Image 1: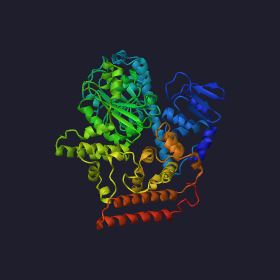
Image 2: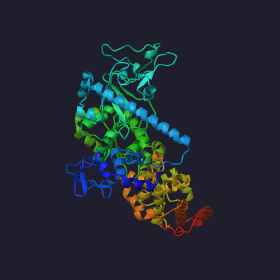
Image 3: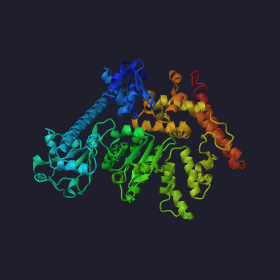
Image 4: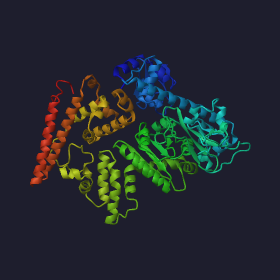
Amino acid sequence: MIPAGFLQDLLARVDIVDVVGRHVELKRGGANWMGLCPFHAEKSPSFSVTPAKQFYYCFGCGASGDAIRFLCEHTGMSFVDAVAELAQGVGMQVPQEQVSPEERQHRQRLAERRLSLTEALSKAAAHYRQALRRSPQAIDYLKGRGVSGEVAARYGLGYAPAGWHGLASAFAAYDDPVLEDAGLVRTHAEDGGAPADPQAATPQPQPPGTPEAPAPTAAPRRRWDWFRHRIMFPIRAVGGEVIGFGGRVLDDSRPKYLNSPETAVFSKGRELYGLHEARQAIRERGHGLVVEGYMDVVALAQHGFGNAVATLGTACTAEHVQKLLRFTDSIVFAFDGDAAGRRAAARALEASLPHATDLRRIRFLFLPPEHDPDSFVRERGAAALEEAINDAVPLSRQLQAQAAAECDLGSAEGRARMLAQARALWSALPAGALQRQLLGELAHAAQLEPAELAALWMPERAASGRAAPRADAASAPWHRRPGARSRPMPAASSDLALRLLLRHADWWERLCAEDHQRLHELGGEHGALVTWLEGQLLEHGAQTWAALDAGLQGHPLHAAARRIVDPDSLQDRHEFADLERVLHRLWEAELNGQIAALIDSGRTDREHLDRIAALRQRANEHKRLAAAVGSPDGAGRPV
């Protein structure tokens, strides 16, 4: 973790006008500098940079922050990369975590390796762009698909010539191993056998004069270009560096699309084509539009939908969803209406469920079977696509439709099968109002009461006497079950638990799985913040509050997090024992709630009374443990 003191020193030295001015044209207006906001579309400048406070603010959209946040939000840099860039600019050395010399050297080698690959890929991208300008055939193809020169330039489109060694003109050292490691070239097997070349599956027409395929035994010709006679789509990381390519044939030969292989900088399961270019449009439109093909992205941009991104010839993954949710809380998946599109939608649903908190909106759009997004927008126009997006199916309805597929809901067997198919999907949702409401809707479709379905799906809760979720209890916090006499959980305890975790994110790893579950069940904004924080930890590791605060900029949970971690609390000093204490309080309150629910049931049989006694013993144990780790008020420490 980067020390907070270092961040304060860094921001004091950085000139925010210089940092912002590299990306926004600024003009002095009194004590401040003004320009057009980079975070939303506007015609009159409302974006203000105040050098005295090292702060920016937009009077139009409310975007605000310091130099670190600006780089993170505008360029897509990670917090660590933004800090490193600013530190380098002012001659400061970012403090390194305590690691062994061997580990430090290993990390340095990895960083140098990644840099060498991205430099080679960037050079290849420039070569392909130049080749496009010299190829009338490739230019005519793009014009025939309705792609303008402006859009082609925005996405850096290029052309890989048909020759076997075209990159030799761009790289003096064509035999450099970096080219193969970057996925730009391929070599024959050592035994001189035929190359494993997917482009050889269907013979491709080659322009006159194209050299023949390299002979297997000719040593000088053992290496050849991976991409040949294809329109090239550079794949960029969020920060803008080229990390791979997609290539499309200009005719009907196969394979139609060819991607870069997996490398040290490129993984299909993690990257989205067009995300770097789409960031601004995603903010302006309020949602990201996920499609399946490179040409879909480019065609949609041509018709005003610059917020489109594409998966890279693979099923949508949870990492894809998580990456896109860094820029928006609303996603629309657009699929072909055929069977393959339905299968892709099923995988996208499964990838989205763990991230579908109550504050996010995820929808599914199915085009007519004869169309993909490219053909649809070209034939029917932007207005028709806009209407289709507005009518997209919410995640909740898509889940129910997927669960009911091939089920006869007119029979008991069909309804039972529907529930069996729905259970795993429903269980993948984060705890919250959406999950509770879906329980009620699924129960209704199966002709059951919500409590009956809860007893089937959560028998451990039914056995323990915990009240099952009710359809009319969707907005009730977890600590106040309808009908129970248990006292509500003091908001201060939930606030303190979140405040400690947001300020000391590394403490999450020291908690047991049971405590993780308890925190997720807080519900409301607290539970949503826990889900968000866990996602950040999985993607970026433990971060400072400053980094998390930057990541929450523009997020619906930002105000809640700012309220919980108020400025006055930043001066407080805490220990891990404070978190342990408040978790024991949460457990005590939860168990007391279960006891109250059991008492309210009116049962007096021995098994029931034994259950109450066991729960009371556990509640008292948590009460004792809370006292053992310190006094309730934190031994004088402000909480």
